[in-house]
Image 1 (cartoon, each protein chain N blue to C red):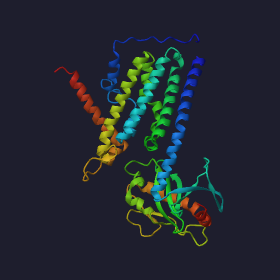
Image 2 (image 1 turned 90 degrees about the vertical axis):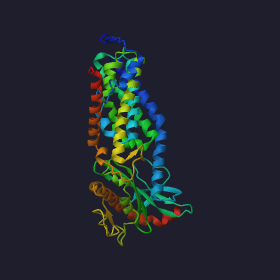
Image 3 (image 1 turned 90 degrees about the horizontal axis):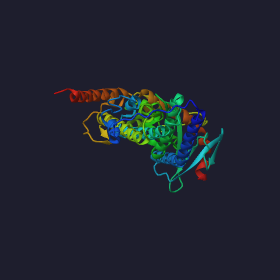
Image 4 (image 1 turned 135 degrees about the vertical axis):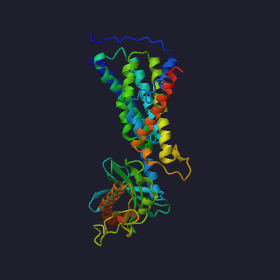
Length: 214
Length: 211
């Protein structure tokens, strides 16, 4: 390799693999704590199915890009690392786009442009830059899995509330009684902001209670 | 530096190409199935269909395989080889993005007998009612699209009126809260049927016998 190829130092952290996995689920949940990748979170969480599909698509991209970035961390020159990460992420996003089309066209239509927008989801680039480029492949794998599942979990939480209130249904089947008048606003973007805000208040209150000495 | 960038691009290309070739037949299959389901939903009883494309002003020709830029119309037949009607795809601008829809045209009665939206990105809860609002879809079960005596133009232009104000057979009851989207559907069908109806009427005898 050329001389301008720096070796990126590996930061040894004491965290075990299981902690790398668990931190994404709760302690530094990408949506509720880091508040990353809000565009798809607000846009496609209007039904549980959409939220789940979006979450899993992001999980797949995050996992694959983390593993690839991590295994190529000594090959990618520092000066052009962002371009390399974007190329790698875009590859997996394109793949996921085709795979979703193959699984279900209806789902692909529902998610629309937001599949392609995973490329610029700051969560994925953030994990590549801040974690995978400095850590071993196995740790990056666990980090991607944890962050991806945390993202999916948060999306499904939002999707459940919004679909239940906005459409009176879950997974497309009606669960609330006939008399219930759906709150259409919950399906619109403003409903997404509202639900997310309420959830953030709730989670911050929980966190605060934990840290405060009783 | 350049070699590593090249290497990464190469790796990415290989991944994308392999996924593309793996999923391509499945996606095409899905598209075909989606179209077939849509045709069946607006023309129940369809057993088989033939695709026709427009060759010139007066001629429709049966095609076995559809090449990309051509938009065919489909003649649908029932079990007894009787012509049920035509399924025609049409598209145009909605409120946010293109709306793509499929409608059924009964050439004998000169009526539109069904409509289903194939693709749209209208506002959820408002404009998206054009997909599943039963009252709105009922407009398209007996929509009058008679041609003039010279078979060149529609006798009456399709009109989208305020909800509940439909009095004539060529009018469509709009949806409250989805004014733009429901008007767009009316205009898309109006444009498409003015294009296709004359040429179908010229070729109707041939198509009924051809199967």
